[in-house]
Amino acid sequence: MPKGSSRKRERQYEHIKDSAKKRGESEKRAKEIAARTVNKERARSGEAKTKSRTSIEDISSSRRGGLRSHSGAGGRTKQQLYAEAQHRNIKGRSSMTKAQLEKALG
Image (cartoon, rainbow, N blue to C red; front, top):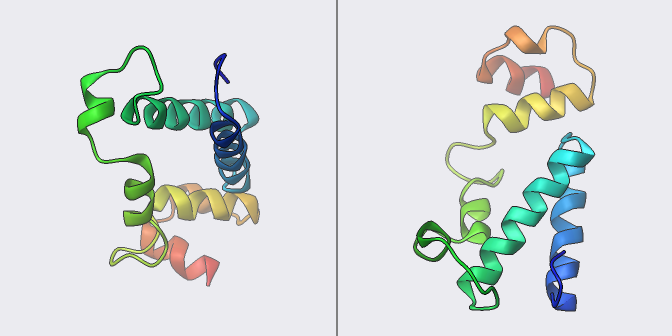
């Protein structure tokens, strides 16, 4: 976490990192996802010294996550299904379609 980060942002970072690891991401990738998400939120709220245009104009990370959650119209993404299949060690997952992954995961 950057210097001067609040405890809230540190908790947010840990929560996002843990969630990414549960989805099957590597430790390095989980840290990257968490850092990018927290930095974007810091930029949106004016806590960061620098910010990109997309950080402040794009849809917020929490809103985007909510739109892509399991309960949405499209359900889970193929990547999310694949990560769970990988976590459960399902054979033949790399050649499966989204529908086949959904069926295999039950």
